[in-house]
Each structure stands twice: as structure tokens, then as C-alpha cells.
Length: 184
Image (cartoon, rainbow, N blue to C red; front, side, top):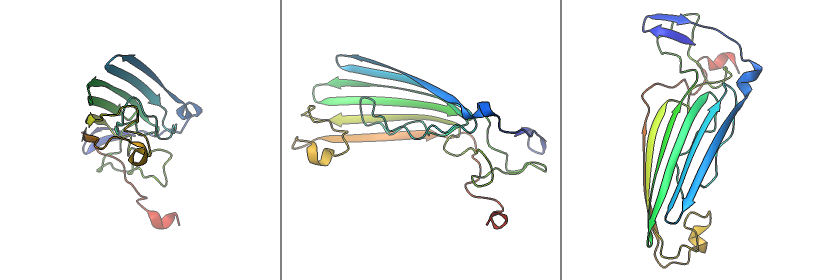
């Protein structure tokens, strides 16, 4: 880990501890008539991997936590239905516990990578994101977001349009080893 400013970093070294394997999340949901809402928060240690979250909460949102360790995150969203239409905004904020190594860090520091290091900052990078889904489904008994909806949807016409915006204000670590020839 490096602290400081460009050209004046202090490199800190440490070892992975048993406690870095742990993490957890909590999720609350609310349903009442036309409105559904949820809020979720999580914190995951440096090497805690919770896997991807394939849970469908109320609708077909694509914006989810990354499933990796080294992060804290908050998600919240709601749906509002009027007749055959539904609007569903969703929000995500996440931040790594230990951020990425700066590109200009000097020795003994080096850029982290996914091959040599126990953790890195990739999909768990600092993110503020929003998503909006607009749906039209005249037959809500057949759920539009089912995995086989092209076969099971019984409406002659149903549609969904969505938009996701992500803001990544910080960098991420390298995707591959910086000295790959030494590994293989």
C-alpha cells in the first residue's frame, strides 16, 4: 500500500491476516402495493470472495456488487408500477478498503496484479453508479425478467429499456502480471 502524493509516497507492507477472509452483507426489502424497495450494505475483507450476486430483487437490475473482496458497498433501489408500466431506479456506491497502487510508486512498491498478488483493485474499484429501467408488460403474471422470458412471456408486445451510468474517480490495478515471464 502506498500513501502520500506523486513523487513522495510512503510504501507500507503487511501480510494477509486470517481476518482478511471475512465479510458480510445485510439486505432489507419493503413491498407495499405499487412500490417495492430495497437497501443493501456489505463489507468484505482483502481476500474475502463472496462470488457474484445473481439474486433478482423485484426487477431485472444489472447494477450489482462485484462479488470480490477488498470493498465496502451500498446498494439501494425501488420500483414504482402504474398500470402496465414500471420505473425502477437503482444506485450503487462501492470503495476498496485498500486502494490501487499509484502508477508512479517507487521501490519497494510495485504495481499490483491479479497473478502475483493476493488481492487487487479491479471490479471492486471506487464506483458511484446509477441505473434506470423502464418496463411495459401488459401480462405481469409472466415475469419479464425470467431467464427464459423469450419463451414464457405471453404478451404479444412487452418491452424493457435500461441505462446504467458508472463513475470511476480512481484508478485500478493491472489486469495481468507485470513480469509474466518470471511466473511461467
